[in-house]
Structure formats: C-alpha cells, structure tokens
Image (cartoon, rainbow, N blue to C red; front, side):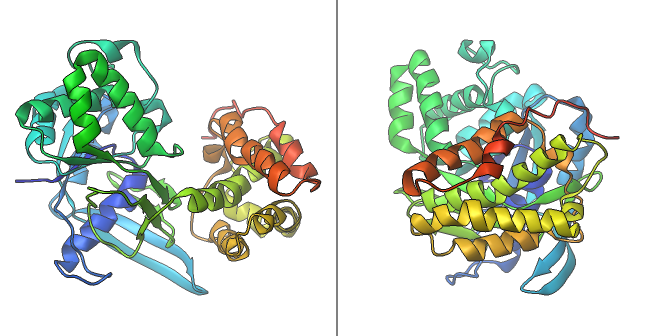
Length: 382
C-alpha cells in the first residue's frame, strides 16, 4: 500500500476538509478539467500528540467503509443537508509507537506532507535539539528528523503543506526547520532549502462538532487557498482548492471579517458574564445582537476595506453573516473563546493598526472596547 500523502493531525477539521477533498478527488478519478480528480493518492494519518485517548479515532479513520461527514447549512439561498463517506485514509499511525514506519513512509513514499497540529504543536520544546527522535519534540523538530531520513534515503523532492492557522505558515515552518536542521548537519539544511517546498496555505471551513468514533459536522462553505510556487505538488485538484499568486488578500478578508466577527461576539459574551453555552447561530437569532454585528461591519470594518480597494469585501461580509446564521451548526462561543487574548490581538488589534494607516480618523469604538476584554479562562460548559 503506497500513500503519497503523509498527514500529521487527526482533527475533525482535517477530516471534513483536506481528507474529504482528497476522497472526492479519488472518487472522480483522473482527468484534466478543473473539476477532475487528479489526486496523487491516498493518505497515511499520523497522530503526533501521543494522546492515547484517540486510539479509537485512529482506528475508525482508516475503516474500509470510511467515516461520515455531515454537511449542513445554507448555500446560495438553498438548504443543504447531505452526508458523505470519506475513504481517502488508508493507514493510521502514531509517532509514539510507530516512529520507524512513519520515517520509512516519509523517506520512501511521501510526495506531500500535510499538517494541522494546532498552535501548541509548533511551540519549541526542550527536546527539540536532541540528536535523535523524542516524542516530546515539537512538530517542526519531528519533521526535521523525517526530512533527515528522506535526505539519507536519496533526497527526492517533497512538498510540505501546513494548514495551521499561522500567517505565512509555510515560511514560518521552513525557517524553524532550517534552524533545527542547520544545528544537526549544514548539508541537510542545504538539501532542505533546495529540494523541499514549504507551501503557504489558508484554510476555511467551520467544522462545528465531531461524530463518533470518527467524522464531523461541517458547513457547506469550504476553502483551501494555496500560494503558487515552483516545484509545488498539490495533493489533489478540487473545486474548493484555489491556487493563487498571493495569499495576502484572502488572509485579510478571513482574519478581519470572519474571525474578527467571531471574536467580537465572544467579547460581548464575556462582558455579559460568560455564562451558559451559547451558539453562534443563537447570537445571530437575537435581532439586537445581529443588528449590532451588522452595524459593526458597516461602520467600523468595511470602510477600512473600501479605503484599501477591497471591492469584494461587502459580498464577503454578506456570506459571513449567512455562515454565522447557519441553523444546523453547533458552533459554541466557548470553543471560539479559547486563547481569546491572542486571537483578539491578531483579529482586532492588527486590524485597528491597519485601519489607522489606510483610513485615518475612522471611529472604531466597539472594536477598541472589544480589544480590552480579558481572556476567557473559565471551564468549557459541560
């Protein structure tokens, strides 16, 4: 069994996003049109966290019948409710117990290494500079050792495609891997610099809840924007995958409209006491809360985008409001509230800085007030 896609991460997001796209592409088969499959092959999924509680999920991901993904929401004014089976995952492994096999796949089979390990997976660890693999290493350190195995095996070119929500994620991962590789072997660092493509990408789909033992519930909207560069290998062709010359414009729209709106709702919730377990759709069903959000976009957000020449921003806001109001998704404010202080700075703080430059004098009192809200440190409601 050959799996040219090696994936790190078992999140419900990947299950309803990249793995679903690859599954649909494999089902369509080869072709040359924009709707054709052109998948390079199936996936080996690797759990890198060492969390033993996810063993059942790992087994279910590679079940022959696949796992379920339920798509529910509003698309083009029409209700969408469908269920599909994802069958792109053919093998599951864990770095803590299967490192030798993971390294073999990385050295011999992989054409694309895909990751979504969360912000915590990228945090530097004390074990990162160990001469050999340690489970306690960060994902960039583990990746460095896998690239070393490929280099020793002959060094065929490779694409590394992170989907973590880090601006310029490919550039950031590349810099950290080169730093670690240079400390191991300068020749290894030179090979990585010349033969490994690190793709910058941006992903967008609200995946609101898991299905057990594997699977997820997601909205119809989905985007995987990937920045073009020489030598890039895509895992598949799919209508939701956009190959673009520059991610900057898409990143601003998502971060400072959709993500900003989420964090603004969380700030309002915290000011009100942070009680209960409200859903985004419940906020949108409150006429006063929806009117406040619409007013925020109109008065404090869209003028900045207009001044910067983003003619597509009003349509993006309208689409975002529809996504927020999706009557089927259980998207909890308490989930969005995790790491709230950091999110506020990225989503609202950076937007205020940008706005001060392109639209000086614009009054943005609600955004400035939201930025002052403390992190949500309560427990997730049961």
